[in-house]
Length: 411
Figure 1 (spheres, rainbow, N blue to C red):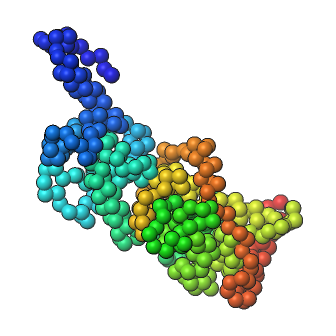
Figure 2 (figure 1 turned 180 degrees about the horizontal axis):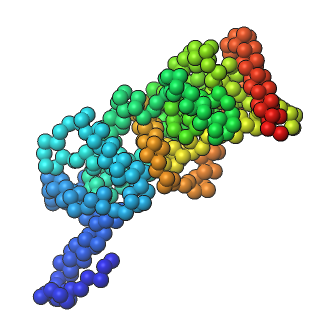
Figure 3 (figure 1 turned 135 degrees about the vertical axis):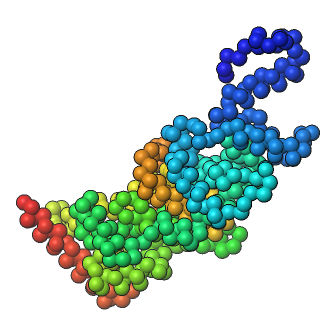
């Protein structure tokens, strides 16, 4: 608290009634704490029996929003709270504004306030009431809920998702992805790395069995594909936690797409042993002999594919509402849209080169890992035709030989 001197006033604090004295002290606290996380002047409950009516509370909240400008805080603190830089937030507001209704009343929230409230929720995974109490927001819990729903829907607009979650459609875009993977890891032909992660949700009202995973909680099993820059180029959050990773891929529209382009281009995805080996899906070789070409291939495969695991870790560290222990208190459809929204924001951070990366505590890391399902080794030939398996084995064998020849030429 600041060193406020009551002696500068004509009325001494000691002469004031106790109640008025407390109010003055409270007023001083509110001035000094305006730029802090919690504005104590607005900790009244939403169903308060205060003599001041709802209209008066709205005016008070609007006043504190006007007095506390979140864009005035230090840059690092801003990123810590909202994950994006100030410029990225302003750009996002400009991009979303044309799709939002024009404020009609003086008490209506600004676009900036709405976006920051949603970002705060995504970043912390905290319950909505504390987010509404942040000084620069100062809005009621029901309004926070409406705002999160609105901004999440906007971030799921087809044009927004297509801009920020971009699959390489052209041969030149695919070539750029392949070159980046090769330059970083030395693995040729890699278009992306694929994996799934579980995002906890509350028990759904319908088809509960589809969402109950083997770790005994309800979840979405989210499929992600990342490029070499840790940008997510595909996300599918439409499946429940009971679905196996390979099942999600088998029903995904990118599967036939990969089958088609692989006929003319030597490109593939890297997946773990839970996926079926195919010409377009390279998997590790289990039980290899140390020092063999197959062991060298598997080492390089694992090293390269680790990028998607790091991407998932970064996504959840940035937007902790996706952590298992936070649990999204929404229906599967709404929870999936929140996952999509966080993916869009993650890619905005990657493209914007946001270097301030939040870290999870050791306890959070251990718990998150323990609540993710390890996929059983895929029995080759369990799905698909024998020809698909033979083609996959031939493609992987050719890649092993290519990598071995490349190492020999460098020695």
